[in-house]
Amino acid sequence: QVQLVESGGGLVQAGGSLRLSCAASGRTFSSYTIGWFRQAPGKERERVAAVSWNGGSTNYADSVKGRFTISRDNAKNTVYLQMNSLKPEDTAVYYCAAGPLGLYNYWGQGTQVTVSS
Image (cartoon, rainbow, N blue to C red):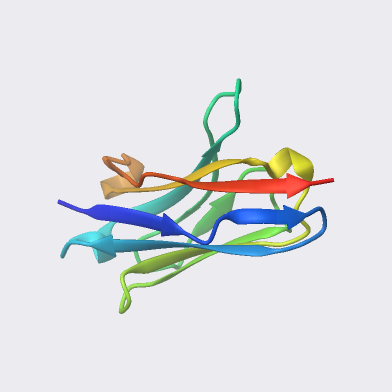
């Protein structure tokens, strides 16, 4: 079992930055792919970034490329999402998820990010 807890969300002006954290418990965390997802009201959930088990491979949605950076520290059982140059359209609830081979079996409760114009 893996439990995930997100933190770091909040209200920020357009152009600002936030860093989200996803703290995990469970011995298998370091072997899992981790993804950050977001869902805005009335919209489908979108995967914005993912990182492989060792941090060696990352990928991003086109909408956040060049602005968001995903990283992980397996020693701290934590994954981060650094979000720069935030836009109002980035407003959403952000979730982290974990699982083997990107299956995302485990989800956190989410953290709200609101970007004002």
